[in-house]
Length: 278
Image (cartoon, rainbow, N blue to C red; front, side, top):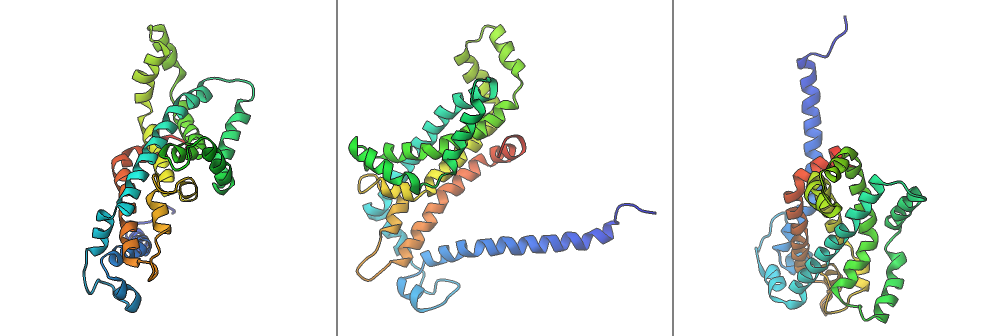
């Protein structure tokens, strides 16, 4: 007589899965722990000894970042162009995704695929053209230059994600709203957008994270005034070599914004994996 395995037989498998998952998570956390530990050590301790905990605990590395304009302005610049990029990408992608989800026109599938191919291309392909273009129009080393360059990759991703969410909204809602006298702008902002909030949250998260961690374009298109933290970390070499403690502290502070964004949009991300294209 066959049947489901008894609870007693399933418990060992559950425990084994829990042990494997715990070990895997600990393995993933080792680099983060080591980064945090290094940020509280001096350079001499980092280079000359192997310690799991800081032997000479110091906050000097964080003080350097928070008091040196060449460091903390990198975070300010990053926040400015990342916010601009996320806002522009959403403003462009929302109507575009609505058009793809509601209308059929000649070449729509080809155009949709072409958008995705821009996202597939490596940033190195566009570094030189962007550099030449922005230098010609006096946009080099500005926040808007990096924000617009990142839109080349974030807008197709945003359209792709949002189109999946919008396709899940019944067309009858649009027709009912128009029959009730709603104009398109009023319908889109007051009825349609609130229905796809999870999709907007997921899209904003991915746009933010890509723009925050992208290095090549942000480094190529900036020099001094708009230099982001990712570029600052790669250009920091003193006469005595790399300042490992300061770099570790900068790495910790770079991780924090992403963790904060994940915390606030975690519910939208969960719904996005369940409902949309993600």
